[in-house]
Image (cartoon, rainbow, N blue to C red; front, side, top):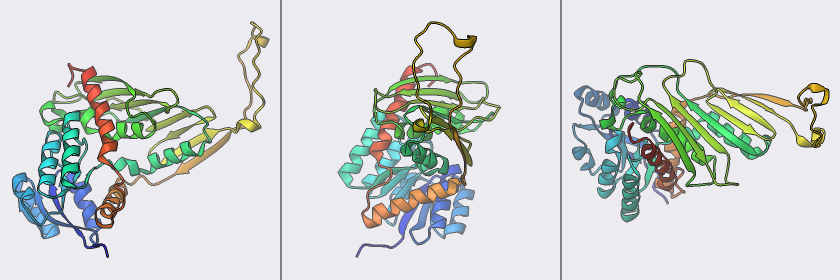
Length: 352
């Protein structure tokens, strides 16, 4: 009989994601996860964790990784520490879920993969937006074929705002490419079948960040012919008007997602008049071609619940560690994303 006891969790870093995502997920899944130890340099955060979880609290990562009670390490520290601390945890015999980005570069990601294989420890990455309701719906609609062959997908993230915390600083691995890029490049890579697409990237450090890191990023992924649509990704702090967060363009229609609702408009080509080429070099009636297609429209609503996505990730992780099921988010799948992010940096040497 497999062990179904809760997994003992250590959380490194009690900031936004460590506390709001990982600690909350564990608190909502008490039959599967038990927080037994944390580390954070802030004494107030240590005390808060002790009160909430009745756990041990350390000031340093070295103390936490040495705690033999920890089975699963959550690495939710600044981005530049992810690879080093994940490797240390796996060498200490702990499974690891690391916050995105998995690593600061491809060398770091490859080192993590090598140590996971060497130690036999589970390594996964907090790519919770794979479970986001809008993205799940997009994948379902694309797979259904109602939009025909998908030509292009545009992914947009960001509004308009200024920022002045550590994630605006290069030395901590900050910037939009590192902070948000892993989510949206991950989405794009899941929509194509080419692990090494051509990459275009433009990045800027704008006055909207107090620090020196990038605050505006455009990425285009061009897969090989027949391996998926063109992917355009915009991640910005400079968009003051609403945009669809995902726009899908197909040969039979389109889909626009706005977080909690989606609009689909498509037609069935078998119900449309035949498309016959008119080779005469004249404009009939001096107008552009017009026709009434048999359009179908759907409005889809869903709940955009970020917390539920994190919990779903953790439930899948429990099933992998305790029940031997296949890992839902493999580090190999995330490595392809890290390769794209590294290419983006190479294309923008003066920015990052």
